Image (cartoon, rainbow, N blue to C red):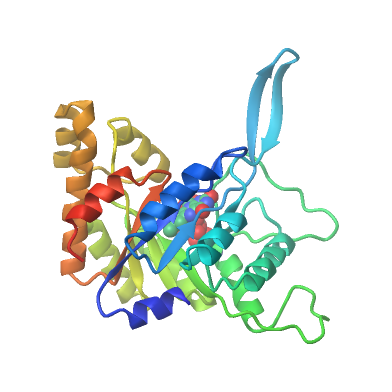
Amino acid sequence: MKVTEHLANADRPFISFEIIPPMRGGDAKGLLALIDDLVKYRPPFIDITSHAAEVIYEETPQGIQRRVKRKRPGTLGVCALIQNKYHVDAVPHILCRGFTREETEDFLIELRYLGIDNVLAVRGDDSGYEKPLQYGRSANHYACDLVRQVSCMNRGKYLEESLLDAQPTDFCIGVGGYPEKHFEAPNLRIDARRVKEKVEAGAHYVVTQMFFNNDHYFHFLDVCREEGITVPIIPGLKILTSLKQLNSLPKTFFVEIPDEFAEEVMAAKPEHVVDIGVEWALKQSQELLDRGAPSLHYYVMQSAAAIKKLMAKLKV
Ligand SMILES: Cc1cc2nc3c(=O)[nH]c(=O)nc-3n(C[C@H](O)[C@H](O)[C@H](O)COP(=O)(O)OP(=O)(O)OC[C@H]3O[C@@H](n4cnc5c(N)ncnc54)[C@H](O)[C@@H]3O)c2cc1C
């Protein structure tokens, strides 16, 4: 079922999750245990991130060597598992960077045969590796180009224009939004207009980047609505679980940690940080629900420990 159908059919807000495929060579056991834990909360859908190849510099006896590695393959396999073993809708992320449009089309065909109804289309970040475009291959530059490609397939328009009897796909398309603006955007309003371009290209809903101050979400919502974006905007939340994340989350995701929260984490014993993070996320979640958020999306990634503590207290 489509994410938009889940939203339309729900008589109260629901919870969804986002997980990350294991590292190359990783064991499926941990992944299965994680999904076992998450499905207990009856998420209508689970997102699975996608990871492009990146450039790695390695020190070897022959000197520093440049290697191109895809550290986390497996998005398609994890989707198939979630959809067919757990009967929960899987939402694979699809990327511009690191994939040609031709590879994306093939991936979408695989998804269709697996009965997957949703994709979340994002650009991806610069990984230092730019895929060479040989033999007439082409690339999507911005997420709106990727959305356009999926929308074209939804109208039966594949890359090979002379394809006879091409069957239209019927994907529900999600895109990303940034309550604190995307780091490359000159300001929030211009960034919101870029979100509008994605909606005009065919996106059906937006999931936000994580934020730790709900004011950012409510302001972003206002700006998006002023710009004429009418699709659901689902808040994305992350539970801070370690002191290290006070620096790593702002550095990686360009988000601010509010003063009061940061002070509390810095003053705590390391073993208490998870509980402080859970309490903060709980406060955020409850306020978002009270003020009409359509649903809540949690960036769980690899461990269910913190989300279990939160779910034990959250009143949905
Ligand atoms: C919900 C969510 C899920 C994510 N999942 C993944 C994942 O699975 N894998 C992964 O690698 N990354 C993921 N990301 C991270 C994402 O790839 C990065 O944040 C990336 O830098 C931007 O992606 P985007 O789709 O928002 O890009 P875009 O919408 O293309 O925007 C990127 C930047 O370009 C600007 N822009 C857009 N269009 C134009 C234009 N026509 N001209 C000039 N500027 C323009 C925007 O304002 C913005 O600053 C995710 C992000 C979110 C919010």
